[in-house]
Amino acid sequence: MKHITVSNRIYFFSSLIVSIFLWGAAIGKIIAPHPFWPDLDLTVAAFEIIFTLLLLAFYHRLEMWAMTALLFAAWSGYSLFWTSWGLTCSCFGQMVHLPPGFSLVVDIIFSSAAFFLSYLLGIQRVKLFLCSTLAMAVFGFVIAHLLYFNVLFLEN
Image (cartoon, rainbow, N blue to C red; front, top):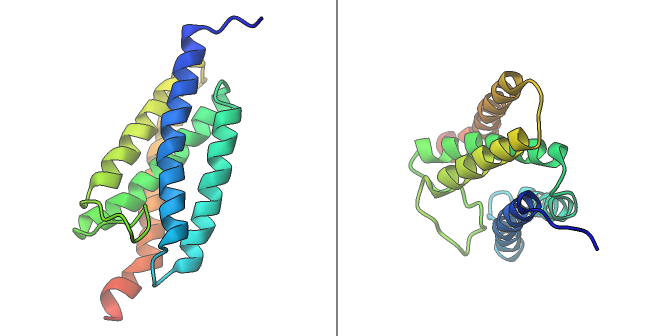
């Protein structure tokens, strides 16, 4: 019988918490996608479901937590775009209306936790990984700006 260590339990329960949030977001997008970009919501929902399955399967792997940190960093930048305009990002579809900034806080917490778990699992070049994580946040903000700024503010 395999001995389950405390650290494995931490990795597993962390993956479970992240997965519950991502499944909620995916289901919200599937049930009530945004009317301006339903195809994007459904694509992101499919990605979230696949990502959660991978996270639950490989919760003990450094690479999985590094990808999780980078993904949530990018989503932090995306959420920052919405928060900077006082809007909600509709990350949970149109049925759940969260206050502006809620998703930003959750994304920062998850990205930071995944970064820390990557560190505990022995990631090398921590400074480079930190810079990459911050760069992904900037990337997420820029992508959100390119995708939505014209639709939200110039065409109305």
